[in-house]
Image (cartoon, rainbow, N blue to C red; front, side, top):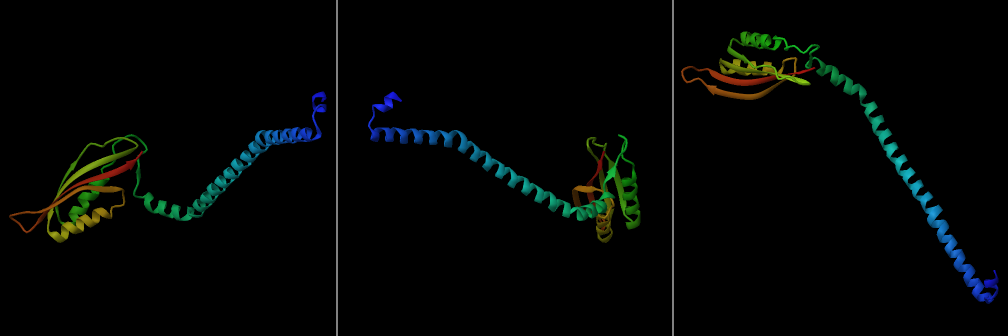
Length: 175
């Protein structure tokens, strides 16, 4: 204070103002600004969590429709309890469809490709009239299981008025 005593009143006022400015800067930099940043972060977190809550509420509102679609498709997905080969019901159904359509059928099943979703590949050679062949293909699409047609080739038989179709069908099974 003795040093301050040697200053004139105007210099003391300027020194006091400078000290107050420095003190204000320190309070704003070290206390107010970090608190302000933390409040802003908390607001962003609250907004994000509210958006997530709204998304969950929208999903919960869609639950009945999702359950209906799941129940409609559940019959198409075959579950294997053990790690065994899938049953020959696909082959039996294909043979039954060919008998109903009165078509000549040649089946070539491939080994099952194991995994979380196992695949049974079956090659088909089908021969018959155009109407019956197309009815057979429509019936394959209506099978109550998850099958995909990987390859389809339709060609005419030169000596007959028949068509020949070569297909590669995959049945997917979930373990």
